[in-house]
Length: 156
Image (cartoon, rainbow, N blue to C red; front, side):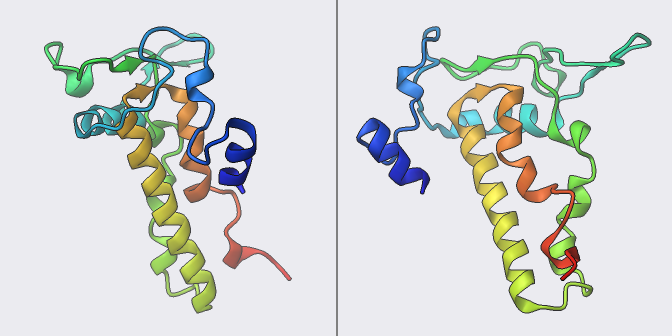
């Protein structure tokens, strides 16, 4: 359905409107590169927030990948202050165990959960490879793994 919408709106099923953004240099393109994956995964998953004694107690801050001031960013890499998903939703680690749980008895439900896990991993990898590090993209892969209710827990 997203591909159909993109085709009707932009004339291309793979165009998400990024090239129409009114943004700075290198921010209105999608250019996947393997060199973007490692820093992308660091920022999307592991980048620690700044904890403080004053409300809101947790703040987004810029940190160099792996605490290395000399980390060589790929050309055109875009960075905003961010907090890794493991700090925002630490329960997502446990969510990876749910599809293999013996409590998920129905094979259809187990397949759905593994499909959700594979989809969220693919989205995370895609986002990491784009070279855009921004906190707002975390909601693209988190809901699939960290929903408040799993299909196996829904009552009939």
